[in-house]
Image (cartoon, rainbow, N blue to C red; front, side, top):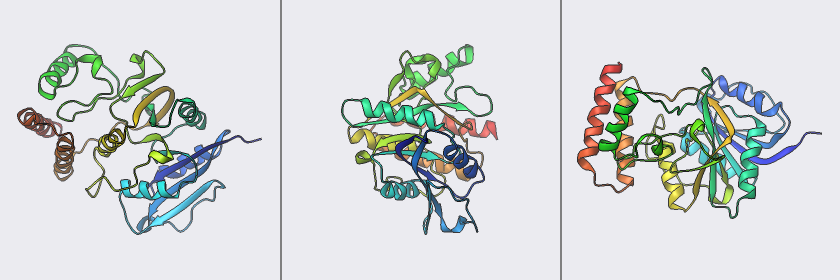
Length: 282
């Protein structure tokens, strides 16, 4: 007998080939979730999609990761909803682990995410490194960004809005309280979902997870990461074209303003350093 997990998965896509691989993985194993909603703009609609018994396709006349996801949130029927990027792979058993953690917590004001691994190297995407250059970087981020030092900055957001991921190898407990959650895979209680468009930009949604986390925390939602669940994906995208880099800086500035910080000098020093790094890496 197939065991069903009462979770709705909302996947946003523009019809990427990897979507089919992800759906096959999610629908072919036991246990499995009882609802998967795939939100695709009309312009990327293909002639035929494979029929899965627990998958519903929705085609919209708008495009944008955040607004597509919000559309899916509103269609979800279960009390627990998992937002999932189509290039983020997680097993059904790991989805169930996150669901059970939320189910057994006191209260419902929580959102939870897995730890992330690179699908090619099998290493933590947010790997904490040691050595001379790592120490130099720690010193720079401490004095310029106002970040915490070394391992203590895991899961934090600095005074100027720079964020730091969580390396599961340095988690002392199964659950870690974080100041932000990567947006590729997050489980929510349905009543906590943000269903207004909080992302005022078009195109690739740079830093939308930071902005989303900001508004979740404003709703008094505690953000958790569990190393009991793993998600596999590619290394984070770094803009290589100037037009994309310019937009990245624009979003970065918007997020910094949301934080109501007055660290103007440090913020602009960090922008200059970002720009220099962009030039060197081109």
